[in-house]
Image (cartoon, rainbow, N blue to C red; front, side):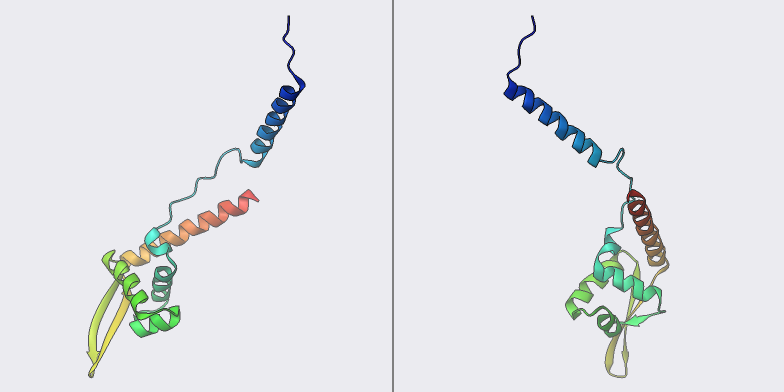
Length: 131
């Protein structure tokens, strides 16, 4: 003999089943696979530094500071991280009696930026496909 299910429990079961169906509709059949972004370049100031240097042969510290609208300390810290990764090179010299710091994008930095841009283009492509 079949056991009678109290009405309250029957309602809760159907409600739970409905919630599961709604969740299934919201989730994509498979999550898109996105490339890992280069965290070193992805940060706003560092991306600005490598982008500015990609379009200029070299830029001084003051030029970069002006273009990126940042402070001396902030620019120094980010530039040092890019130097350590060998994405940019730094040359310090005197122009007359005035100290000058000049930055250039290295070949490794140019490759890293190109790869980062490819990764971002893939993110954009996948995001547009989901709509």
